[in-house]
Every structure is written in structure tokens, then in C-alpha cells.
Length: 382
Image 1 (spheres, rainbow, N blue to C red):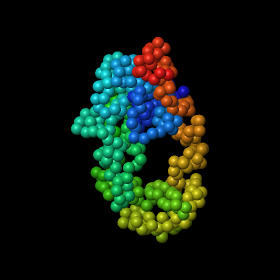
Image 2 (cartoon, rainbow, N blue to C red):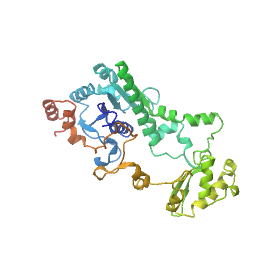
Image 3 (cartoon, helix red, strand yellow):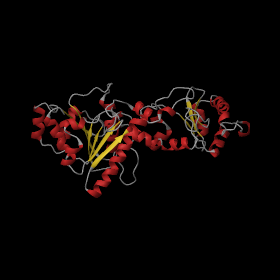
Image 4 (tube, rainbow, N blue to C red):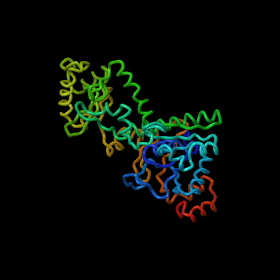
């Protein structure tokens, strides 16, 4: 099931961006094998494997990569893979003996995907970092947050998952297409700062054109414009207003029960604070549920703001099937959707400690070799 059926992916497990990239490929039908440490590393937090959704639908092994036989086993698995994902600091895979040179020598068709924050070379390459650091240096974080307030991290969506995982997934699939024409693999170097900078193309162009201010909360789509903002409702919840186009704005004002001729000029930034106050007062007069009903089905571009507990049960989520609940665990449905090759519903997350033997067997490792690796302590005993 899925358009990537038959594609084999070896994922050198790490945190966040690498596993999310692997999840995306698995969701689309790829056979993803997660290679984890024999002794779990420090993630900075603990999570029940059932809820580690980034590893859903994958096979998994736990293996000692400090032992030559562990490295040899992974090298053998890479010979069977179409794609490889790794997100370690530059040089780590080379020190393990699993860098691009030996693996591409073994498997010339392998597409070797590398994800870092700063890139493989340069003065920043060896530095630790997280999403907040990458989006800060790349120019995105400075524009996110309230007027006269501090920058606010937009979860870890922009750097880790958008600038990192999605760009790596796109690069892997583009390289896989090229490999099927040329018969030759290659390295895909996906630095998060590269992806973030790419995503800032529109705003960078706007800035140079003189239509984007550096002050947070003073632009059309950064919460500055009163027609593109969130408003608190009577019950302390929020509605999101995105009535950018004038025709949509007119509908919003009409459904709010206001008269457009009585309002300040929406296109004059000097009037924005006054207009925002009027809109806020109006939104505060009703509950979120009441406003949702009023705006439902209209082109006002006004919708409720749901939290993580509410979103899966929203009418849209139910209608479109945005979330699944296999085994009672709520998780997002695979995206995007395909008309002819729809992916199967994702399976749950397996524990590498208990799944190693089955996963190795599925990837062609014989029972005698699996038993030897277990007896030598290179993989779990069972």
C-alpha cells in the first residue's frame, strides 16, 4: 500500500527531525528500518513507546554500533536499502565506519540522506543546537512574536520538521528518481538552516521591496494587521481571523454585525490598533462556539482555534479523517493523499529491544547470524 511500496529505508535513529522524515516515508508505504542504540540514549525526556508517534509503522532493531560486528551488520543492511537517513553531528557516521564512502561503495545506488542543523562543513558544523537556534540564525525567529514583545518559538515546527525533515524527504525522493534514471546514488545534505532560509523567500523579497517591517507584529501576516490575528472570545477561547482579501474582510465585518463605513481604514497601519480594539470588543461579546456557528460555511476566513485535545474531535477532523486512533492512540493520518495508491493505516510503534530479531529476519539476516549476534551481546537476546 502507498506510492513508496517496495522502497527500503534505513533510518539511523536519533531525535525529532530524522525520525519524522522516516515517519513520512513509512506513511507513504516505504519499508523503514529504524536502527537504535543497544542502550537507549538520553533524549532529555522519557516517553512510553506507544506514544512515540514519530516511529509508528517502522521496523526496529537495537544494536551495538561500538562493536565491529554491529557495524558490519548495519553495513550489510545498507546494501539492501534504497535510502538512508542519518542526523548525527558531522563526522559521527564516518567514525562508526558507516559514512557515505564505504556505503556507496557497497551499494552504488544508495541515496544517503544527511540532516544537520548547521551543515556538514563550516565553523558552526560541530556546534550543538536546536530548532530555536537554527531559526534564530536563519532570520525566521526575529519576525515571530507580539509587537513590543520578545521573539516566540513556533513550537519546533519551523526548523526541525519543516526546514529539516520535509526538505530532506523532498531531497531523498528527488534523488531516488534521478537514481532510477542514472543507476547512481548520491549524498543529500539537508541542513536545517538551508531549509529555513528557503522558506523565508517570500518575506525576504517583501523586505527588499520595502513592504515588510523588521518590527514584530507590524506586518500583514505576523499578527500586526487586525484582519490577520487571533481574538479572545467571551469564554476565554480564541477565533482566528484571516480576512486578508477585501471581499473576505467585508464578509467578516458583516457577520460580526458591524458597519464597514463606521470602521477605521484597514489598509492604514496607523489605524490598526484602533481597529483591533473594536474587533476584539466585538469578538469578546460571544463564545467561541457561537462565533463558530456564525462564521461556519462563509468566506470570512474566520475559524475557531482548537488545542491538541480539541482538534482531533473537531467537525473538520471527523469529516476528513485527519486523525486515526489505532489501539486507542490518537495520531495524525498520513499526508498527502493519493487517488490510486493510498497508504495503509499506520501501525503502532515497536520497541527495538523486542523487535530486533523479527526485523533482522525480514531484512534477510539468517537465524544463525541473528543467534550469534544475540549470544555475543551485539543485539538483544530476544
